[in-house]
Length: 577
Image (cartoon, rainbow, N blue to C red):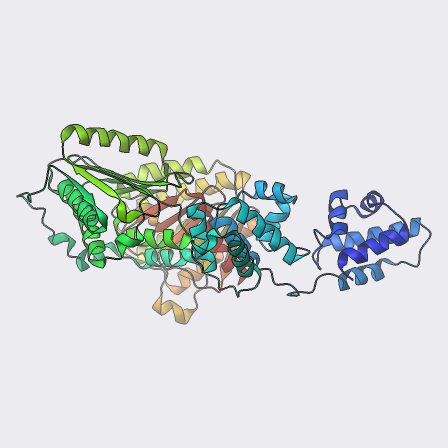
Protein backbone atom coordinates (compact mmCIF):
# COMPACT_ATOMS: atom_id res chain seq x y z
CA UNK A 1 0.00 0.00 0.00
CA UNK A 2 1.32 3.46 -0.90
CA UNK A 3 1.03 6.59 1.20
CA UNK A 4 -1.71 7.76 -1.17
CA UNK A 5 -3.67 4.52 -0.65
CA UNK A 6 -3.20 4.67 3.13
CA UNK A 7 -4.54 8.23 3.36
CA UNK A 8 -7.50 7.49 1.11
CA UNK A 9 -8.39 4.43 3.20
CA UNK A 10 -8.61 6.62 6.32
CA UNK A 11 -10.82 9.12 4.46
CA UNK A 12 -13.09 6.36 3.19
CA UNK A 13 -13.32 4.76 6.62
CA UNK A 14 -14.24 8.09 8.23
CA UNK A 15 -16.49 9.08 5.33
CA UNK A 16 -15.16 12.59 5.44
CA UNK A 17 -14.32 15.04 2.68
CA UNK A 18 -10.95 16.53 1.86
CA UNK A 19 -12.37 19.87 2.97
CA UNK A 20 -13.20 18.50 6.44
CA UNK A 21 -9.77 16.96 6.82
CA UNK A 22 -8.12 20.19 5.65
CA UNK A 23 -10.03 22.19 8.30
CA UNK A 24 -9.16 19.75 11.11
CA UNK A 25 -5.49 19.42 10.16
CA UNK A 26 -4.70 23.03 9.26
CA UNK A 27 -3.40 21.93 5.85
CA UNK A 28 -4.77 23.48 2.65
CA UNK A 29 -7.31 21.58 0.55
CA UNK A 30 -4.93 21.76 -2.40
CA UNK A 31 -2.17 19.92 -0.56
CA UNK A 32 -4.62 17.31 0.79
CA UNK A 33 -5.85 16.79 -2.77
CA UNK A 34 -2.30 16.25 -4.02
CA UNK A 35 -1.59 13.77 -1.24
CA UNK A 36 -4.71 11.85 -2.28
CA UNK A 37 -3.72 11.84 -5.96
CA UNK A 38 -0.17 10.75 -5.18
CA UNK A 39 1.31 13.91 -6.69
CA UNK A 40 2.99 14.77 -3.44
CA UNK A 41 4.01 13.23 -0.10
CA UNK A 42 5.09 14.95 3.12
CA UNK A 43 8.64 14.51 4.35
CA UNK A 44 9.03 11.96 7.17
CA UNK A 45 10.18 14.61 9.64
CA UNK A 46 7.85 17.37 8.49
CA UNK A 47 5.17 19.25 10.42
CA UNK A 48 2.73 18.34 7.64
CA UNK A 49 2.83 14.66 8.60
CA UNK A 50 2.17 15.54 12.25
CA UNK A 51 -0.67 17.90 11.33
CA UNK A 52 -2.21 15.31 9.00
CA UNK A 53 -2.13 12.65 11.74
CA UNK A 54 -3.70 15.06 14.25
CA UNK A 55 -6.37 16.05 11.71
CA UNK A 56 -7.33 12.42 11.01
CA UNK A 57 -7.58 11.68 14.76
CA UNK A 58 -9.68 14.81 15.33
CA UNK A 59 -11.97 13.88 12.43
CA UNK A 60 -12.26 10.31 13.81
CA UNK A 61 -13.35 11.69 17.19
CA UNK A 62 -16.00 13.83 15.50
CA UNK A 63 -17.21 10.78 13.54
CA UNK A 64 -17.55 8.67 16.69
CA UNK A 65 -14.41 6.60 16.24
CA UNK A 66 -12.23 7.54 19.23
CA UNK A 67 -10.22 4.31 18.87
CA UNK A 68 -8.29 5.92 15.97
CA UNK A 69 -5.47 7.57 17.92
CA UNK A 70 -3.10 10.26 16.64
CA UNK A 71 0.05 8.27 17.52
CA UNK A 72 -1.21 5.19 15.64
CA UNK A 73 -2.18 7.23 12.59
CA UNK A 74 1.23 8.94 12.56
CA UNK A 75 3.06 5.60 12.71
CA UNK A 76 0.90 4.07 9.97
CA UNK A 77 1.35 7.03 7.63
CA UNK A 78 5.09 7.08 8.34
CA UNK A 79 5.42 3.40 7.44
CA UNK A 80 3.75 4.00 4.09
CA UNK A 81 5.96 6.89 3.00
CA UNK A 82 8.29 6.00 0.09
CA UNK A 83 11.42 4.37 1.47
CA UNK A 84 14.60 6.31 0.95
CA UNK A 85 16.26 5.34 -2.34
CA UNK A 86 13.33 3.04 -3.21
CA UNK A 87 13.25 5.04 -6.43
CA UNK A 88 16.41 6.93 -7.36
CA UNK A 89 15.78 10.55 -8.27
CA UNK A 90 18.79 12.85 -8.28
CA UNK A 91 17.50 16.31 -7.43
CA UNK A 92 20.97 17.71 -8.19
CA UNK A 93 20.63 16.44 -11.75
CA UNK A 94 17.15 17.91 -12.01
CA UNK A 95 18.47 21.28 -10.84
CA UNK A 96 21.36 21.07 -13.31
CA UNK A 97 18.95 20.22 -16.14
CA UNK A 98 16.74 23.25 -15.40
CA UNK A 99 19.77 25.51 -15.13
CA UNK A 100 21.65 24.28 -18.20
CA UNK A 101 18.63 24.36 -20.51
CA UNK A 102 17.40 27.59 -18.87
CA UNK A 103 13.93 26.11 -18.40
CA UNK A 104 11.31 28.48 -17.04
CA UNK A 105 10.00 26.71 -13.92
CA UNK A 106 6.64 28.51 -13.99
CA UNK A 107 5.97 27.53 -17.62
CA UNK A 108 6.99 23.92 -17.01
CA UNK A 109 4.88 23.72 -13.85
CA UNK A 110 1.83 25.06 -15.69
CA UNK A 111 2.32 22.62 -18.58
CA UNK A 112 2.70 19.63 -16.22
CA UNK A 113 0.00 20.78 -13.75
CA UNK A 114 2.36 21.18 -10.79
CA UNK A 115 2.85 24.09 -8.45
CA UNK A 116 5.97 26.07 -9.34
CA UNK A 117 6.88 26.06 -5.63
CA UNK A 118 6.67 22.25 -5.60
CA UNK A 119 9.15 21.99 -8.47
CA UNK A 120 11.43 24.53 -6.80
CA UNK A 121 11.47 22.45 -3.62
CA UNK A 122 12.28 19.29 -5.56
CA UNK A 123 15.22 20.93 -7.36
CA UNK A 124 16.73 21.98 -4.01
CA UNK A 125 16.15 18.60 -2.36
CA UNK A 126 13.64 19.97 0.15
CA UNK A 127 11.01 17.57 -1.21
CA UNK A 128 11.04 14.27 -3.03
CA UNK A 129 8.53 13.46 -5.77
CA UNK A 130 5.83 11.10 -4.49
CA UNK A 131 6.34 8.99 -7.62
CA UNK A 132 9.89 9.66 -8.86
CA UNK A 133 9.54 7.61 -12.04
CA UNK A 134 6.32 9.36 -13.10
CA UNK A 135 7.73 12.78 -12.23
CA UNK A 136 10.91 12.10 -14.24
CA UNK A 137 8.81 10.88 -17.16
CA UNK A 138 6.76 14.08 -17.13
CA UNK A 139 9.89 16.24 -16.95
CA UNK A 140 11.60 14.36 -19.79
CA UNK A 141 8.47 14.61 -21.93
CA UNK A 142 8.36 18.38 -21.39
CA UNK A 143 12.05 18.77 -22.27
CA UNK A 144 11.76 16.65 -25.42
CA UNK A 145 8.79 18.71 -26.61
CA UNK A 146 10.22 22.13 -25.80
CA UNK A 147 14.04 22.05 -25.77
CA UNK A 148 14.82 21.02 -29.33
CA UNK A 149 17.01 23.85 -30.68
CA UNK A 150 20.56 23.12 -31.82
CA UNK A 151 22.11 24.78 -28.76
CA UNK A 152 19.66 23.07 -26.41
CA UNK A 153 20.44 19.66 -27.91
CA UNK A 154 24.15 20.39 -27.53
CA UNK A 155 23.67 21.27 -23.85
CA UNK A 156 21.51 18.18 -23.23
CA UNK A 157 24.14 16.02 -24.94
CA UNK A 158 26.88 17.52 -22.75
CA UNK A 159 24.85 16.58 -19.66
CA UNK A 160 23.93 13.04 -20.66
CA UNK A 161 27.11 12.01 -22.47
CA UNK A 162 25.39 11.56 -25.83
CA UNK A 163 25.67 13.59 -29.02
CA UNK A 164 23.41 16.32 -30.35
CA UNK A 165 22.84 14.26 -33.51
CA UNK A 166 21.57 11.28 -31.48
CA UNK A 167 19.16 13.49 -29.56
CA UNK A 168 17.54 14.74 -32.75
CA UNK A 169 15.50 11.53 -32.58
CA UNK A 170 12.76 12.20 -30.01
CA UNK A 171 12.57 8.66 -28.69
CA UNK A 172 16.35 8.53 -28.20
CA UNK A 173 16.28 11.99 -26.61
CA UNK A 174 13.58 10.92 -24.15
CA UNK A 175 15.21 7.62 -23.21
CA UNK A 176 18.70 9.12 -22.86
CA UNK A 177 17.42 11.92 -20.66
CA UNK A 178 15.30 9.58 -18.50
CA UNK A 179 18.20 7.16 -17.98
CA UNK A 180 20.52 10.01 -17.02
CA UNK A 181 18.00 11.57 -14.65
CA UNK A 182 17.09 8.39 -12.75
CA UNK A 183 19.53 5.57 -13.46
CA UNK A 184 23.07 6.73 -14.16
CA UNK A 185 25.25 7.45 -11.14
CA UNK A 186 25.58 11.13 -10.39
CA UNK A 187 29.11 12.44 -10.44
CA UNK A 188 28.78 15.92 -9.06
CA UNK A 189 30.64 18.28 -11.38
CA UNK A 190 31.45 21.70 -10.05
CA UNK A 191 32.24 23.63 -13.19
CA UNK A 192 32.98 26.86 -11.38
CA UNK A 193 35.50 25.68 -8.77
CA UNK A 194 38.31 25.41 -11.31
CA UNK A 195 37.56 28.97 -12.46
CA UNK A 196 37.71 30.22 -8.85
CA UNK A 197 40.82 28.17 -8.06
CA UNK A 198 42.69 29.66 -11.01
CA UNK A 199 41.62 33.13 -9.98
CA UNK A 200 42.74 32.47 -6.39
CA UNK A 201 46.18 31.22 -7.48
CA UNK A 202 46.71 33.60 -10.41
CA UNK A 203 49.55 36.11 -10.12
CA UNK A 204 49.62 38.69 -12.91
CA UNK A 205 53.29 39.53 -12.28
CA UNK A 206 54.29 35.86 -12.65
CA UNK A 207 52.18 35.57 -15.81
CA UNK A 208 53.77 38.65 -17.36
CA UNK A 209 57.24 37.26 -16.65
CA UNK A 210 56.30 33.80 -17.98
CA UNK A 211 55.14 35.10 -21.35
CA UNK A 212 57.82 37.84 -21.50
CA UNK A 213 55.05 40.43 -21.83
CA UNK A 214 57.35 43.27 -20.75
CA UNK A 215 59.72 42.48 -23.60
CA UNK A 216 57.01 42.58 -26.28
CA UNK A 217 57.87 45.07 -28.99
CA UNK A 218 55.16 46.71 -31.05
CA UNK A 219 56.60 46.72 -34.60
CA UNK A 220 57.27 50.14 -36.10
CA UNK A 221 57.42 48.99 -39.70
CA UNK A 222 54.10 47.46 -40.78
CA UNK A 223 53.85 44.05 -42.35
CA UNK A 224 52.53 43.82 -45.88
CA UNK A 225 48.85 43.41 -45.07
CA UNK A 226 46.05 43.51 -47.65
CA UNK A 227 43.64 46.45 -47.73
CA UNK A 228 40.84 43.88 -47.96
CA UNK A 229 40.63 40.14 -48.29
CA UNK A 230 38.11 37.29 -48.31
CA UNK A 231 38.74 34.09 -46.32
CA UNK A 232 37.12 30.71 -46.98
CA UNK A 233 37.46 27.47 -45.02
CA UNK A 234 38.86 26.88 -41.55
CA UNK A 235 42.54 27.32 -42.44
CA UNK A 236 41.98 30.70 -44.11
CA UNK A 237 39.60 31.83 -41.37
CA UNK A 238 42.32 31.25 -38.78
CA UNK A 239 44.62 33.42 -40.91
CA UNK A 240 41.89 36.07 -41.06
CA UNK A 241 41.53 36.27 -37.27
CA UNK A 242 45.30 36.76 -36.91
CA UNK A 243 45.44 39.28 -39.77
CA UNK A 244 42.75 41.36 -38.06
CA UNK A 245 44.80 41.48 -34.85
CA UNK A 246 47.92 42.44 -36.83
CA UNK A 247 46.05 45.32 -38.49
CA UNK A 248 44.83 46.49 -35.08
CA UNK A 249 48.23 46.32 -33.38
CA UNK A 250 50.12 48.00 -36.25
CA UNK A 251 47.69 50.86 -36.83
CA UNK A 252 48.23 54.26 -35.21
CA UNK A 253 44.66 54.27 -33.89
CA UNK A 254 44.05 53.94 -30.15
CA UNK A 255 40.34 53.26 -30.61
CA UNK A 256 39.04 50.31 -28.52
CA UNK A 257 38.59 46.86 -29.98
CA UNK A 258 35.06 45.42 -30.36
CA UNK A 259 34.62 41.64 -30.66
CA UNK A 260 31.34 39.78 -31.11
CA UNK A 261 31.04 36.27 -32.52
CA UNK A 262 28.76 33.29 -32.08
CA UNK A 263 30.80 31.22 -34.53
CA UNK A 264 31.74 27.71 -33.33
CA UNK A 265 35.05 27.72 -31.48
CA UNK A 266 35.76 24.00 -31.15
CA UNK A 267 37.17 23.42 -34.64
CA UNK A 268 39.20 26.64 -34.56
CA UNK A 269 40.68 25.80 -31.14
CA UNK A 270 41.76 22.32 -32.30
CA UNK A 271 44.77 24.04 -33.89
CA UNK A 272 46.88 24.64 -30.76
CA UNK A 273 49.35 26.83 -32.63
CA UNK A 274 46.53 29.09 -33.82
CA UNK A 275 45.11 29.32 -30.28
CA UNK A 276 48.55 30.31 -28.97
CA UNK A 277 49.04 32.96 -31.68
CA UNK A 278 45.52 34.31 -31.14
CA UNK A 279 46.03 34.80 -27.39
CA UNK A 280 49.44 36.34 -28.12
CA UNK A 281 47.76 38.74 -30.54
CA UNK A 282 45.25 39.81 -27.88
CA UNK A 283 48.13 40.31 -25.43
CA UNK A 284 49.80 42.59 -28.00
CA UNK A 285 46.56 44.58 -28.30
CA UNK A 286 46.57 45.07 -24.53
CA UNK A 287 50.29 45.89 -24.54
CA UNK A 288 49.53 48.66 -27.01
CA UNK A 289 47.09 50.04 -24.43
CA UNK A 290 43.80 49.37 -26.23
CA UNK A 291 40.60 48.53 -24.38
CA UNK A 292 38.67 45.44 -25.53
CA UNK A 293 34.87 45.24 -25.50
CA UNK A 294 33.93 41.60 -26.04
CA UNK A 295 30.46 40.08 -26.33
CA UNK A 296 30.90 36.47 -25.21
CA UNK A 297 28.81 33.66 -26.62
CA UNK A 298 27.36 32.15 -23.42
CA UNK A 299 24.57 30.04 -24.92
CA UNK A 300 26.61 26.89 -24.55
CA UNK A 301 26.98 24.17 -21.87
CA UNK A 302 28.20 25.49 -18.51
CA UNK A 303 31.37 23.40 -18.78
CA UNK A 304 32.31 24.99 -22.12
CA UNK A 305 31.42 28.47 -20.91
CA UNK A 306 33.60 28.12 -17.79
CA UNK A 307 36.55 26.68 -19.75
CA UNK A 308 36.32 29.64 -22.12
CA UNK A 309 36.27 32.13 -19.26
CA UNK A 310 39.25 30.40 -17.61
CA UNK A 311 41.31 31.14 -20.71
CA UNK A 312 40.38 34.81 -20.44
CA UNK A 313 41.40 35.16 -16.77
CA UNK A 314 44.90 36.52 -17.49
CA UNK A 315 43.47 39.10 -19.88
CA UNK A 316 40.65 40.06 -17.48
CA UNK A 317 43.23 40.74 -14.78
CA UNK A 318 44.66 43.63 -16.79
CA UNK A 319 41.45 45.62 -16.26
CA UNK A 320 41.46 46.51 -19.99
CA UNK A 321 38.55 44.23 -20.92
CA UNK A 322 34.81 44.81 -20.62
CA UNK A 323 32.87 41.54 -21.18
CA UNK A 324 29.20 41.40 -22.23
CA UNK A 325 26.64 38.85 -23.38
CA UNK A 326 23.42 38.87 -25.41
CA UNK A 327 20.39 37.54 -23.56
CA UNK A 328 18.73 34.42 -24.94
CA UNK A 329 19.53 32.33 -27.99
CA UNK A 330 19.92 34.84 -30.81
CA UNK A 331 19.62 32.61 -33.84
CA UNK A 332 19.35 28.87 -34.35
CA UNK A 333 20.11 28.97 -38.09
CA UNK A 334 22.92 31.48 -38.70
CA UNK A 335 26.21 32.27 -36.96
CA UNK A 336 27.89 35.66 -37.32
CA UNK A 337 31.13 37.47 -36.55
CA UNK A 338 31.65 41.24 -36.15
CA UNK A 339 35.08 42.62 -35.22
CA UNK A 340 36.12 46.27 -35.40
CA UNK A 341 39.02 48.42 -34.29
CA UNK A 342 40.26 51.88 -35.26
CA UNK A 343 41.62 50.88 -38.65
CA UNK A 344 40.29 47.40 -39.41
CA UNK A 345 37.03 45.50 -39.48
CA UNK A 346 36.11 41.88 -40.08
CA UNK A 347 32.74 40.26 -40.65
CA UNK A 348 31.80 36.63 -41.11
CA UNK A 349 28.80 34.34 -41.43
CA UNK A 350 27.88 30.71 -41.84
CA UNK A 351 24.95 28.34 -41.56
CA UNK A 352 24.94 26.79 -38.07
CA UNK A 353 26.54 23.38 -38.15
CA UNK A 354 28.52 24.16 -41.33
CA UNK A 355 31.39 26.28 -40.07
CA UNK A 356 33.78 24.81 -42.65
CA UNK A 357 31.84 26.71 -45.34
CA UNK A 358 31.95 30.04 -43.53
CA UNK A 359 33.08 33.26 -45.19
CA UNK A 360 35.15 35.98 -43.47
CA UNK A 361 35.86 39.42 -44.92
CA UNK A 362 38.63 41.71 -43.62
CA UNK A 363 38.86 45.34 -44.65
CA UNK A 364 40.78 48.48 -43.79
CA UNK A 365 38.77 50.72 -46.17
CA UNK A 366 37.78 53.72 -44.09
CA UNK A 367 34.09 53.72 -45.08
CA UNK A 368 33.69 49.98 -44.51
CA UNK A 369 35.49 50.13 -41.17
CA UNK A 370 33.25 52.97 -40.03
CA UNK A 371 30.10 51.09 -41.04
CA UNK A 372 31.21 47.94 -39.19
CA UNK A 373 32.23 50.07 -36.22
CA UNK A 374 28.71 51.47 -35.94
CA UNK A 375 27.25 47.96 -36.11
CA UNK A 376 29.49 46.70 -33.30
CA UNK A 377 28.51 49.72 -31.20
CA UNK A 378 24.82 48.95 -31.87
CA UNK A 379 25.46 45.36 -30.76
CA UNK A 380 27.09 46.64 -27.57
CA UNK A 381 23.98 48.69 -26.77
CA UNK A 382 21.86 45.54 -27.05
CA UNK A 383 24.24 43.54 -24.83
CA UNK A 384 24.22 43.20 -21.04
CA UNK A 385 27.35 43.26 -18.87
CA UNK A 386 28.65 39.75 -18.19
CA UNK A 387 30.64 41.27 -15.36
CA UNK A 388 31.98 44.62 -14.27
CA UNK A 389 35.72 44.59 -13.59
CA UNK A 390 37.18 47.05 -11.10
CA UNK A 391 40.87 47.79 -10.63
CA UNK A 392 42.28 50.74 -8.70
CA UNK A 393 41.57 53.26 -11.46
CA UNK A 394 37.85 52.42 -11.13
CA UNK A 395 37.69 52.21 -7.34
CA UNK A 396 35.28 55.16 -7.02
CA UNK A 397 32.77 53.38 -9.31
CA UNK A 398 33.12 50.26 -7.15
CA UNK A 399 32.45 52.20 -3.94
CA UNK A 400 29.45 53.87 -5.55
CA UNK A 401 28.04 50.50 -6.67
CA UNK A 402 28.49 48.92 -3.22
CA UNK A 403 27.00 51.95 -1.49
CA UNK A 404 23.86 51.94 -3.64
CA UNK A 405 23.47 48.17 -3.34
CA UNK A 406 23.61 48.32 0.48
CA UNK A 407 20.17 49.96 0.41
CA UNK A 408 18.62 47.20 -1.72
CA UNK A 409 16.85 44.39 0.12
CA UNK A 410 18.06 40.81 -0.28
CA UNK A 411 20.06 38.14 1.53
CA UNK A 412 23.85 38.28 1.25
CA UNK A 413 26.30 35.40 1.60
CA UNK A 414 30.06 35.65 1.62
CA UNK A 415 32.86 33.08 1.52
CA UNK A 416 35.81 34.73 3.24
CA UNK A 417 39.54 34.11 3.19
CA UNK A 418 39.98 36.10 6.43
CA UNK A 419 37.80 37.48 9.24
CA UNK A 420 35.76 40.44 7.91
CA UNK A 421 37.29 43.88 8.29
CA UNK A 422 34.19 45.62 9.67
CA UNK A 423 33.98 43.51 12.88
CA UNK A 424 37.60 44.05 13.98
CA UNK A 425 37.87 46.47 16.94
CA UNK A 426 39.73 49.63 15.93
CA UNK A 427 42.49 49.18 18.54
CA UNK A 428 43.13 45.61 17.39
CA UNK A 429 43.23 46.75 13.77
CA UNK A 430 45.73 49.49 14.58
CA UNK A 431 47.87 46.96 16.44
CA UNK A 432 47.84 44.63 13.41
CA UNK A 433 48.88 47.51 11.13
CA UNK A 434 51.63 48.54 13.53
CA UNK A 435 52.99 44.98 13.72
CA UNK A 436 53.15 44.90 9.92
CA UNK A 437 54.97 48.27 9.82
CA UNK A 438 52.29 49.89 7.69
CA UNK A 439 52.90 53.56 6.89
CA UNK A 440 50.60 56.34 8.08
CA UNK A 441 48.93 57.06 4.72
CA UNK A 442 48.22 53.37 4.14
CA UNK A 443 46.90 53.01 7.70
CA UNK A 444 44.50 55.89 7.08
CA UNK A 445 43.35 54.22 3.85
CA UNK A 446 42.62 50.92 5.62
CA UNK A 447 40.82 52.55 8.55
CA UNK A 448 38.64 54.52 6.10
CA UNK A 449 37.87 51.29 4.21
CA UNK A 450 36.85 49.64 7.49
CA UNK A 451 34.58 52.58 8.33
CA UNK A 452 32.98 52.44 4.86
CA UNK A 453 32.37 48.68 5.10
CA UNK A 454 30.87 49.02 8.57
CA UNK A 455 28.51 51.74 7.31
CA UNK A 456 27.41 49.60 4.33
CA UNK A 457 26.83 46.56 6.53
CA UNK A 458 24.75 48.57 8.99
CA UNK A 459 22.59 49.81 6.11
CA UNK A 460 22.09 46.19 4.97
CA UNK A 461 21.22 44.97 8.48
CA UNK A 462 18.30 47.41 8.56
CA UNK A 463 16.44 45.31 5.99
CA UNK A 464 18.36 42.08 5.24
CA UNK A 465 20.47 39.26 6.64
CA UNK A 466 24.13 38.54 5.92
CA UNK A 467 25.91 35.19 6.40
CA UNK A 468 29.71 35.16 6.50
CA UNK A 469 31.58 31.86 6.19
CA UNK A 470 35.24 31.47 7.03
CA UNK A 471 37.33 28.32 6.68
CA UNK A 472 38.86 27.54 10.07
CA UNK A 473 42.65 27.24 10.13
CA UNK A 474 44.45 25.25 12.84
CA UNK A 475 47.67 26.48 14.45
CA UNK A 476 49.63 23.84 12.49
CA UNK A 477 48.05 24.85 9.16
CA UNK A 478 48.61 28.50 9.98
CA UNK A 479 52.36 28.19 9.55
CA UNK A 480 51.83 27.19 5.93
CA UNK A 481 48.84 29.41 5.15
CA UNK A 482 48.91 32.50 7.35
CA UNK A 483 45.81 34.69 6.95
CA UNK A 484 46.11 38.20 5.52
CA UNK A 485 43.87 41.15 6.34
CA UNK A 486 41.03 41.47 3.76
CA UNK A 487 41.96 44.80 2.16
CA UNK A 488 41.03 44.17 -1.49
CA UNK A 489 38.92 47.35 -1.53
CA UNK A 490 42.04 49.37 -0.64
CA UNK A 491 43.93 48.12 -3.73
CA UNK A 492 47.19 47.91 -1.74
CA UNK A 493 48.80 45.02 -3.64
CA UNK A 494 50.42 43.60 -0.49
CA UNK A 495 49.70 41.16 2.33
CA UNK A 496 49.10 42.38 5.86
CA UNK A 497 49.58 39.14 7.74
CA UNK A 498 47.85 38.32 11.02
CA UNK A 499 49.58 36.37 13.77
CA UNK A 500 47.68 33.28 14.86
CA UNK A 501 46.61 35.07 18.04
CA UNK A 502 45.40 38.10 16.06
CA UNK A 503 43.50 35.73 13.78
CA UNK A 504 41.76 34.14 16.80
CA UNK A 505 41.03 37.59 18.28
CA UNK A 506 39.39 38.68 14.99
CA UNK A 507 37.24 35.52 14.94
CA UNK A 508 36.18 36.19 18.53
CA UNK A 509 35.25 39.75 17.53
CA UNK A 510 33.14 38.42 14.61
CA UNK A 511 31.31 35.98 16.90
CA UNK A 512 30.70 38.70 19.45
CA UNK A 513 29.33 41.05 16.77
CA UNK A 514 27.03 38.29 15.50
CA UNK A 515 25.67 37.74 19.03
CA UNK A 516 24.60 41.40 19.12
CA UNK A 517 23.32 41.77 15.53
CA UNK A 518 20.34 39.51 14.77
CA UNK A 519 20.75 39.94 11.01
CA UNK A 520 24.40 38.85 11.00
CA UNK A 521 25.45 35.19 11.01
CA UNK A 522 29.15 34.30 11.26
CA UNK A 523 30.10 30.67 10.66
CA UNK A 524 33.37 28.76 10.78
CA UNK A 525 33.57 25.81 8.37
CA UNK A 526 35.84 22.79 8.23
CA UNK A 527 35.91 22.84 4.44
CA UNK A 528 39.01 24.49 3.06
CA UNK A 529 38.28 27.58 1.04
CA UNK A 530 40.43 30.02 -0.93
CA UNK A 531 43.45 32.00 0.28
CA UNK A 532 43.42 35.09 -1.92
CA UNK A 533 39.81 35.67 -2.97
CA UNK A 534 36.50 36.48 -1.31
CA UNK A 535 33.10 35.67 -2.81
CA UNK A 536 30.13 37.94 -2.10
CA UNK A 537 26.63 37.06 -3.33
CA UNK A 538 23.55 39.24 -3.24
CA UNK A 539 21.12 36.41 -3.88
CA UNK A 540 19.42 36.40 -7.30
CA UNK A 541 21.02 39.73 -8.20
CA UNK A 542 24.82 39.53 -8.54
CA UNK A 543 27.97 37.89 -7.23
CA UNK A 544 31.38 39.46 -6.70
CA UNK A 545 34.78 37.78 -6.63
CA UNK A 546 37.36 40.01 -4.94
CA UNK A 547 41.10 39.37 -5.11
CA UNK A 548 43.48 40.82 -2.55
CA UNK A 549 46.60 41.15 -4.66
CA UNK A 550 48.50 40.27 -7.85
CA UNK A 551 46.37 42.09 -8.86
CA UNK A 552 43.85 43.71 -6.48
CA UNK A 553 40.69 43.38 -8.53
CA UNK A 554 36.93 42.87 -8.19
CA UNK A 555 34.66 41.01 -10.63
CA UNK A 556 30.96 41.83 -10.19
CA UNK A 557 29.12 39.13 -12.15
CA UNK A 558 25.63 39.82 -13.49
CA UNK A 559 24.97 36.88 -15.84
CA UNK A 560 22.14 34.88 -14.15
CA UNK A 561 23.48 31.36 -14.82
CA UNK A 562 27.04 32.24 -13.82
CA UNK A 563 25.86 34.18 -10.77
CA UNK A 564 23.58 31.28 -9.77
CA UNK A 565 26.50 28.84 -10.07
CA UNK A 566 28.58 31.04 -7.77
CA UNK A 567 25.75 31.12 -5.24
CA UNK A 568 25.60 27.31 -5.34
CA UNK A 569 29.31 27.09 -4.50
CA UNK A 570 28.39 28.32 -1.02
CA UNK A 571 25.80 25.67 -0.24
CA UNK A 572 28.01 22.53 -0.06
CA UNK A 573 30.41 24.41 2.20
CA UNK A 574 27.55 25.21 4.57
CA UNK A 575 26.25 21.66 4.54
CA UNK A 576 29.57 20.19 5.61
CA UNK A 577 30.09 22.33 8.69
